Image 1: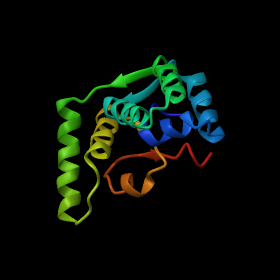
Image 2: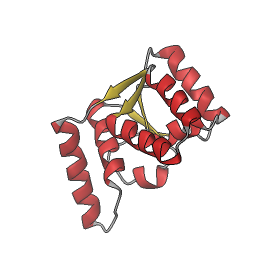
Image 3: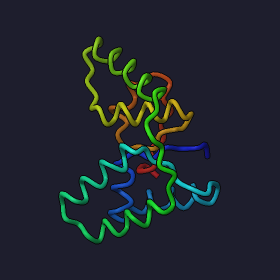
Length: 135
């Protein structure tokens, strides 16, 4: 398994006790000391948990965070994201800012991106995707 950045939707599946995703978390942590998430994923998941006032999911997320390396935005990741967003916009393809920033972070760090949102991320050049939801 290659070093991987975990997208917000995969964290959400984990919080909902998805067996496939849980198994991938365990498999990854057997090989690596920490999971990797973008600061954008950290924000997106927290915003969703707070919106739903889901205290049990918040406790699970806090447990996950203790096993995470939170990857911050850099000028390189922002530049990659901006270039890809502009290229896609010229093609008439719109992807949300959060997803673009997560993709740029994965590319800048040389990570594979674990996501179930293949439809959006498949448009991004040179981004390797793995779907932890599909088992």
